[in-house]
Length: 176
Image 1 (tube, helix red, strand yellow):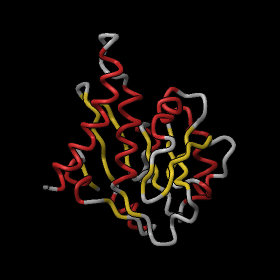
Image 2 (cartoon, helix red, strand yellow):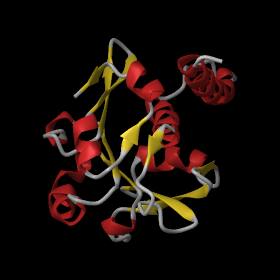
Image 3 (cartoon, rainbow, N blue to C red):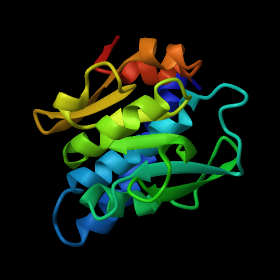
């Protein structure tokens, strides 16, 4: 099976399950649910350095109380890289304990405090805020023409010895 086809089938499967639950209410899947599905796939198609994943859990950190945080509950307990995904609050978890850090518009001030602590660590950084994407984030999610698009900063990932699958890179709107 071709790698891109496999990625698309995996993503479509997750999106189909999300949309099935929404079909009964005759609505399309909410944006935050789709972003959570994309984030799960970003995790699947990212490689950390050998010493980058130290515990038996893969900690996804996001701001508690946000709609995206609630949507990310859907990936809690799933596995990736032989680890169980856990969701942690950015407000209560040290950023250095995160394997994936998700920053939204409401996190601008918090991220400015976290940034120096994680600059050289293999933490997959994801944002949906164009003003936060000054080269710090490895993946930026955007909604264009009612579709989710993403930009990958592969250069930033390589600085901390992380690599994105070629499958993921081919699906990106832009790779830096």
